[in-house]
Image 1 (cartoon, rainbow, N blue to C red):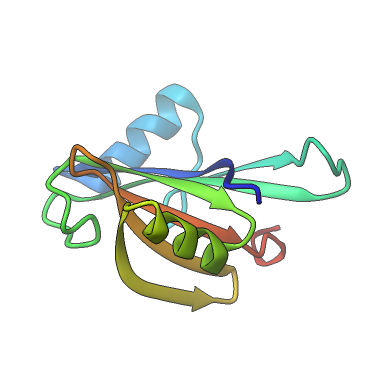
Image 2 (image 1 turned 120 degrees about the vertical axis):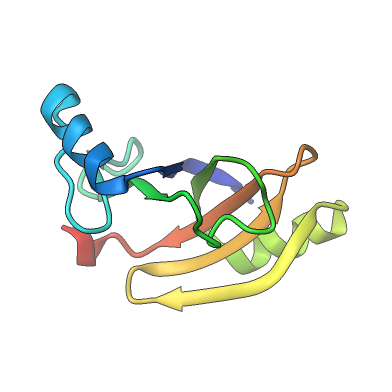
Length: 129
């Protein structure tokens, strides 16, 4: 079973997310919409498959990173979220018992040993493209 297949997104807390989006666009060329930026790329094993990696600042007081108290959260792409979460539980990893499903994929969360919340995403790339 494959586990992580790539980086799905990088998210961080910011005092002023809109100001951060404008700064990153001006200085680093990361164009954002209301949710943040989106990088498009091709799957290494299947060049026809277009994929995405998200980037975005969140408000400093967001609850989305909870229970983590860290300032950032990584999102990793996975192929079979349910199977992976079951395996991680068996391995003693702290799994947040909640899975959310949207038209663009399924999301689940785990905690690393230092208290960082990690988002796992089984993507459906087509709605982004």
